[in-house]
Image 1: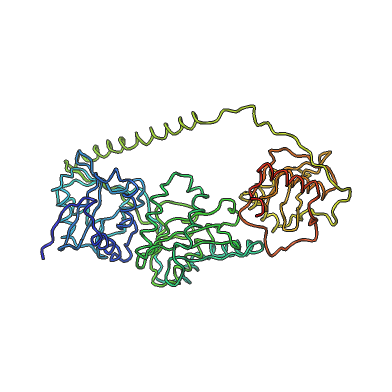
Image 2 (image 1 turned 90 degrees about the vertical axis):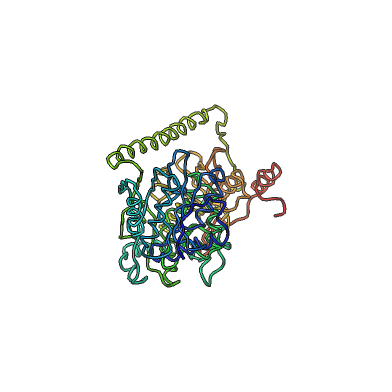
Length: 527
């Protein structure tokens, strides 16, 4: 049968063609790429329906079976670029074989010309993919002048020798993760659970934890479309491609790693973690254990960390093939560099303008400093003259410092201790404990500086009263004292102490009851 080339609109992609599109990507072997899938394209379009009318998908077909596809966005002036610009990490022409067939790509290039595309820009084309170079040759044969420039690099590693060899190549990173895990294990039991892989619970079982961590992390504050993210995750899961790995400290999720498995390739799509647990290096731990589990699944020959440098990527990938920015236009070759320069200026100006507008908007909406909200100075008086024995003061050994660092959401003990005074001490309140508190004992009256609260039903007032009872001394505090409610609980292995575990005093109980009456406690009556 003679191959035919045609250009489709987005609404013409029916179920069978969508399935065949994804099968093209699976057939690419080590060149398989999640950004070439229909799952990725459809989730991007579903979150931007207003862009659908500008989408065209030139392709070459054998009957109803696609042989090559190149989804594009067009404007009215005959200019086109890859679908999903700004969100797409990499661009390729979608074909169904490891090695390209030049005749197929020549037909595709001819279809671009017949479709009236006078100018084509494709960003971040994979320089290691032979199909990229075959497409560039086909564009030249079709009468396009082609300009190619290296802009970035991929971050990948070939792993045909298995987990043991990969781990040995990165033994420094492996040792660092092991040391971090052992130290964290003094506080909480760490484990990584896999979802979506063969023989593991379904992806949906871990998705709520991943979404929560993503929103907590710095990535959740970048304004990335949660709708597109969820659509893509569900689409990949429906095709058996999604893999999710979640790191738990006891029963609390503190990091997650979402990967995409396509044949022999695993793409590590995103890592998210609770920034309060940064001292435990949860992103590194979950990523490394996820790598190990991905190898255990079998058949893994390429790890793709996606473009863009980061400390993690720099440490665990060794190959940096170039990514190419391509500009092809039906103009004389000598004119193309001038045309490309003009386009880059056109692209840069709106980016700079948007940045300027965001800055001005942020300044305009910044709250003006006011005089209301001046903190009140309060004092809690003890109901006893006998201090707790032995003293409820915490011993600030290394495990305890790590615990406080995580509870106070600091990156390390040094950063945390920089805020402390020379006479600051930490005290444990209650048997569970209910809270731990930092107190400046150098003042004439001990002064409460910071509270880590493990039971949110206790108000600052109640905690100050219980602290006063433990010390048998008045305790001063401001009503603006930082009160932290950490996600990670007090370590179970440490157990209830024999100190500081007396029941709350009548004054504390009264304060709690009063606070509940005012509706200040988060737990409902009788809970």
